[in-house]
Length: 180
Figure 1 (tube, rainbow, N blue to C red):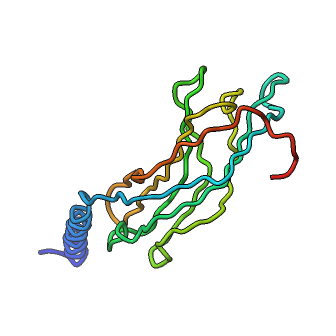
Figure 2: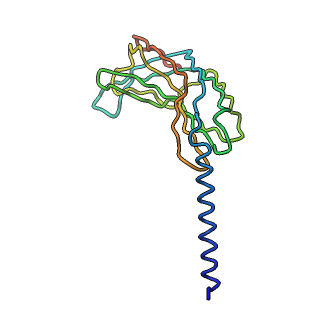
Figure 3: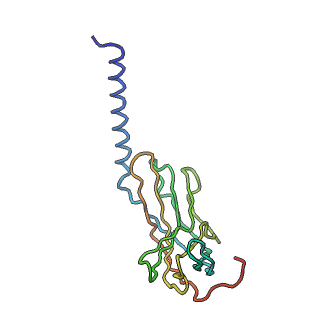
């Protein structure tokens, strides 16, 4: 009646259906969990330079440097369905040319089993903080926010913003020194 091949096919299809149901159950158990935690961001130093912008025709752009401290306990985010966290610190600000500017300044990946108590002191920007003009000079409302992507074993990839942020005023004058 049934050949060995058709029985193997039935067994494989049933096993695949059971694994899909278990994966969906894994997703549902953690899908509605609140992944926000309090974050403390302190800025200890802000420096601003006006440098040549080689992307345009002989223009100069603002380049910002920020030294910051970040403290957060990320333990409540990790559960059995979290594989890793992708953390990133971003700056948001408004200029006369653009209503919303967003720049990623720093990032870090935290794997399951690593130290989840984030306590970073005197960190410098990992990436350049360039503005496409002179929108950083004298800008009093540059907001730093720590956000993260939760990378699960099964399910969606939620983007979560930390519950703490800080506003940083940038200086009205450019720095003349060459050291940072």
